Image (cartoon, rainbow, N blue to C red; front, side, top):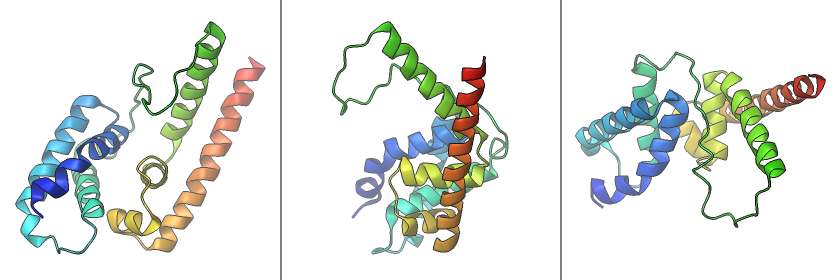
Length: 171
């Protein structure tokens, strides 16, 4: 298969992951563009039969970590206008809109609190639906470390959400 046939179906997923990492739309676009340029340049080193998706995500991740924004914490607001077209349309009331917005804000803030090592593993598993093996290949860590980080990420996320809910109900 050609580079284009393998790489183009991953574009949206790579952009979404880049956006979570950079927490900035423009930087995410630049990161994806640089990822594709590096991948195209190094395509001859890709071994057919191995996991191309993990290879691309690893290039994106390494590019991010080497960028000026890789270690900087930032925030990214969720765009409520970008709904999931696969979900059925619901009649929205002011109350449901407020509850949905509050839930998204709490979850977003809790995810942002996670250290990058936990956040990236959580996002690759839950958002990108990668297997542990794919995550291990992408992040270049043993599969046991993936499982450990994922467990810790989920625990930290749960604790952060609970803390935020308690603070919100106390105020």
